[in-house]
Image 1 (tube, rainbow, N blue to C red):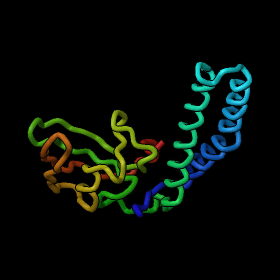
Image 2 (image 1 turned 90 degrees about the vertical axis):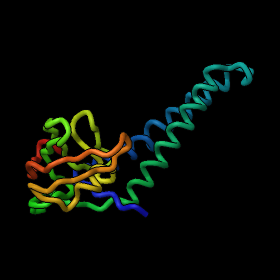
Image 3 (image 1 turned 45 degrees about the horizontal axis):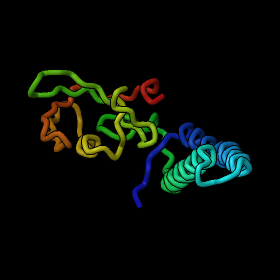
Image 4 (image 1 turned 120 degrees about the vertical axis):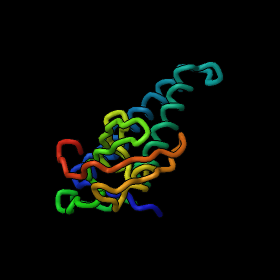
Length: 162
C-alpha cells in the first residue's frame, strides 16, 4: 500500500469533503432517484438514468477518497530541513537542454496541479528528485522522454503549498 504524505490542514479538508459527499450529496442523489422513479417508465426516463449515473459517480469518488484517507501519513513540511528535496520542498530547476528555469513544489497527490507548479510526491519527476541537493544534476525519465535538470535552489515556501 503506497503511503500518501499530506499536511494536516489538507487532511482535514479531505475528510470534510468526504463527509459532505456521504452526508449531503449522496442523500440528495437518492432523493433525485426516487423522484425520477415516480415519473413512470424507467426505460425512457432520462432523469432517472442521469440520477443513477450521478449515484455511480459519487460512490466512485467516495471510494477513492476513503482509499486515499487510509493511506495518509501526516507530515508537517515546515519541520523538515529542505537542504535536500523532500515533501513540501519548492525546487528551482534549470532544463539543461533549453536553459529554461522551472519551479515546482512537491505536494500530495490530492493537491497536485502541474499547471500551478505543484507536482505529486509520487510523480515520476518528484520520485527522481527526492533526496537531491542544490547543484545536483538529474536525468529524469519522464513520460515524454529523458530530460536533464540542474537543481538551482531548494527551499520551503508555505504559500506555494496552498
